[in-house]
Image (tube, rainbow, N blue to C red):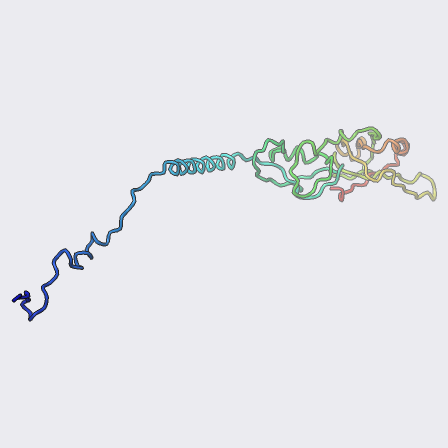
Length: 233
């Protein structure tokens, strides 16, 4: 007769061995997945180094360009061609040094009496090629006339670079009250100190060559008056 082994708890089969126990499979060793070995990427490391170096170089370039700035003259009021510049129509502006010969702000006083060769709009950065001295307006078709004017025949504040009307006075004849504008916009090229009761004031004006004989004839008889044109600034 064959006898089956029994447990101490009333016929239950014996407990599973440690090799078959689920607890043995649920430990740290049982949950760990296989891991492939890491592969090093030297190309990515080199790219990172290049990006860092490139960013550093760009930062240095921006800093150097930002420090290389110059002070220039910017026009704030429109100036038509042939009209004089004015100090009130200029302002200082800091710009990058690009190699263009912008006029420096330190020379604003010397250029305030120059003439505009082209129409200058607000915001224009002034260069030497945009201006000319009054004497440089003497071109073919123009003439310079010297006028000896008595007190009252020219404005007291008259100075070189301004624009004037050249007007003829009536003759010293009864009933003659005719006045004529001989030159609508003549450029004052030079002015001597204003006379009071002493010698006449000498004024050079630049006009069209076709007008110069008539103006000279009136000037020789003392029949010339200059009218200042402030709207020309």
